[in-house]
Length: 182
Figure 1 (cartoon, rainbow, N blue to C red):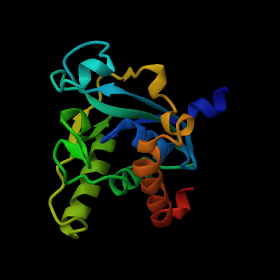
Figure 2: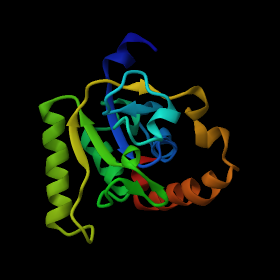
Figure 3: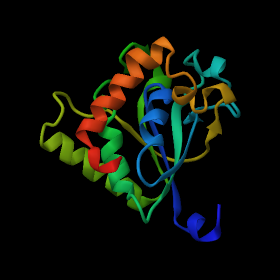
Figure 4: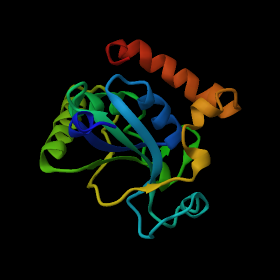
């Protein structure tokens, strides 16, 4: 990566259920340079997938999204994030149940926090969802990259049942709603 490109890169941290879905959604967004699946928000260092699946680590499955802030804004990413999952569902997305699947946004600074809060207020005030948003908003601390087999999971396993039944329809539906970002 050259210096000019890297000067414009920023990172966002989102969890909206299974990180395979979040990763697959953001990988093809214009302006997104890289997406890594991982863990954050919990009590133990360097957690494994097996550990977080117990629900006892308090880590969430999240993605670290590296984006070019000259091509896409943080506010645009927040919009996509909230359209890509059910932010009113506590500790679950579909059949994925547990605190590791919670809706969570980790902000890097106060400006990002304000953007998140403003968007949530807009969604709640305009009753975009039937129920209030329960997305957790926390200051980003540390990201632990998930095991290699979780990276680019959708692209590497597009014919796997979970990908065909859950991820592909989610991506197709979202692409219809937000064509301008693809």
